[in-house]
Amino acid sequence: MEASHRARTVIALAAMALVCAPQLSRAEEVIATDVPAYQSEGHTMVPLRAIMQWLGASIAYENGIIEVTAGDTQLRLKVGSRVVERGAAPAVCLTLEVPPVVVAGTTFVPVRFVAECLGHSVEWNEGRHCVLIHDERGGQERVGLVFVLMTAEPPAAPAAGALEQATPPDKSGDGRYKDHDQPVIAVQTRHGVVYAELWPDKAPQTVKAILGLVRRGFYDGIFVHRVVPGFVVQMGDPLTKGHGADAPGVGTGGPGFTIPAEFNDTKHDRGIVSMARAADVNSAGSQFFICLSREQCRNLDGKYTAFGKVLGDGMTQVDAMVRGDLLHHVWVVKDLPVAQR
Image (cartoon, rainbow, N blue to C red; front, side):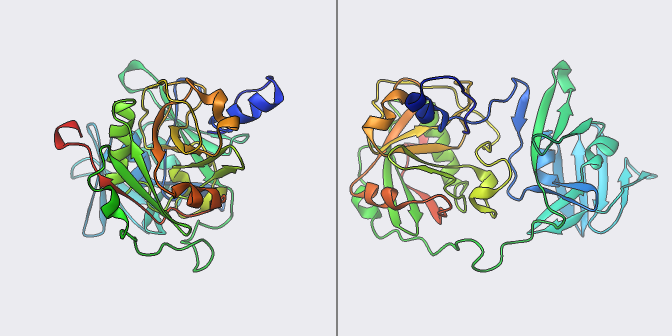
């Protein structure tokens, strides 16, 4: 949700730009990764599972062997070995420049694995510090962007104290909202637990998608990556997981799908929860923002999907949030009826 708009009046521009992600071409998609890609000794290492999922390939692990199935292509590789076997026995053996490694619980492979073993072209974009992976299956090209941590060392798991650490969930206040008339989620940070009701009558697809992400723990461990006093607090970018608000490409991450715009008549008053997006109105994903004031957010009315609001005294905790605060836990307090999920 970084600014891609320019040349408008100063105050209106500042407000609008801060809730927009960098504009991507229609064919480009950011590949969300829990641990970012990195460069080391001249090689770009990318997270295997995230790339394979984006390409529609499946991965299985058995007895230390990683099996990748992409269409009719079957590959077998092993952490620490440069050899990749392709096809059934007798397999064709390919040799990687460097072997796969495991960093912070994530398997990384050299990016050329995608090109040499799966046949997809890859390129490096210096200006954006990212790898572009081209997928031309089905006669229509997609381009996946993988942002790269510019470092000579792998992105090791954060040392104790380097980033805020999660505390156990505090669900002591859930009872107040178990019988609420709308779905309710809870967001726990170091400042306390914020409860928010969601509005399926205003934004049914958005609410269904957000609740689905919350159920599977998508938001746990994500960091608040933008705070603009008097305007918004923004969160929901998976690129921040494990690396905080300064992760490469921060503001562009998402869940791997987009949610169509559901603009409605809700005014962006203080406490309203609304979806972040890029210039494309249908580009919302997992990022959302909480409005801090009506005065600064009135220009968002009818241009962003408002789908809920903070309950009770929750804005006291929201007002205390700063860039880099950790979402310790996010959970569903009251869900949609099963038939609507």
